[in-house]
Length: 536
Ligand SMILES: [Zn+2]
Image (cartoon, rainbow, N blue to C red; front, side, top):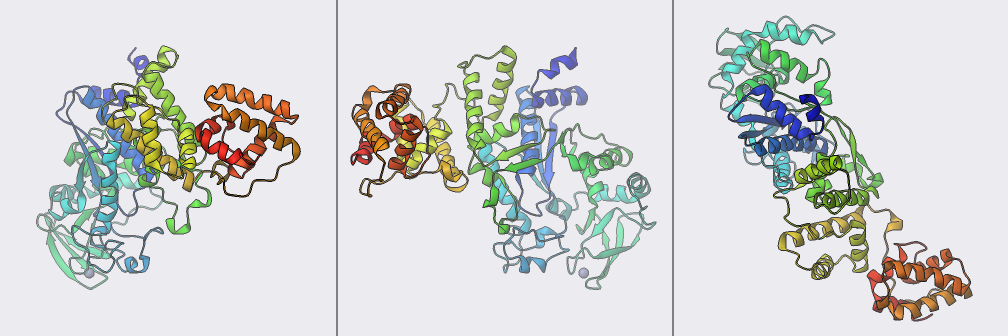
């Protein structure tokens, strides 16, 4: 019975209920996400963050207290300079050091500080964007925590139970780990490189290492030095236990058999006496329609910032709240952008009861709509201006966003400030889409009346003259009536409707194709259309 109920629930709700059911009453529930900021945090990484946020929201709506933590795994080593980073040559001098000790790529000649470094630059970028999409986790900086010896006991336990860990990891390795293997790496305290080897561990808190890079050799106390770090596959389960994590999803690369989630599950139980978190696997995100627009210097990394340039915040959430996490989908930058906005608007109309759909569909769409909101769900339906229409308006007004928003807001009676802000954001997105990604035949600019008139053959010229006469009394037409009228004009002039459309686009925008003509004429307005039709 229970299973059946769940199928009707949104995945965030069914996951929340599973957490409550399996973990029992708990105060608070800990939901976790995290990543190594070794490069630009891309939109695929964002899928994990937003998936956790949706589950956190579902738990809170059930009256539960939740701790939402986001781990910056910034005590990782700088392995490779990503292609999209500026000042790559300078950065390359810092390989094998922790990424918090690598300079900020934008100021590579200033030494790294706790406030300004390579990891921090990548962290700041996403930390500044997440509040815009309604995501506000508690950030944990692992370099800081390791540095403060927070995990000394967890490291010692891993050293003590290294044989158990080795056996778990060896199950999935083609070649067994060496007999002197230890589950730690050490950053040399003199040169900061991790090119070190452990000579001795005293079965307690002390560890002796030697550095191949600078020759330094010394003994460290785990309780006082932050130089010793657990290897990733052990670090993860150790922190599950330390932080009491109840829920954490992972990408499908981690979730495969023998993947790091799989071994972490075994290690948390066998080594730390903990319980693996409830989880699900999320799939990759594709990118569609960027075409040749990404230069190689961009390194093909699409970040949340790129997506927010084209999609308003609610639509970004909608993209991720709709599909189940284990399904792959692509974020479009091509003509599908229009369709996605239309789908979002439809979901909004369904939520406000303005579309006839069956009850099951209504519930599903309404829940997706709620989860797509950054803050509270609007009390009334916001003014909907279709994305396609905004694209046309902005092109007619040469990208004057304030003017377009002002005119639309004046026409949409009673628009409130948040509604105006949404409209402004959507208009900004529409204009960046037009100027950066829209197919060429979607772009236009109105001709200027002072330009030389386009030469037309007799039939089309006659039709344009008839059109001019109709536009003189444009007030009498709505879109449907004007569209019908266009066909009547073509018949009267003895030409094909197709020829009339082509001639109209040539006269108005100097192109053979353009936006839907009747609607376009109404949008441009009588005065400006007449100025262009006057010579005929
Ligand atoms: Zn060294």
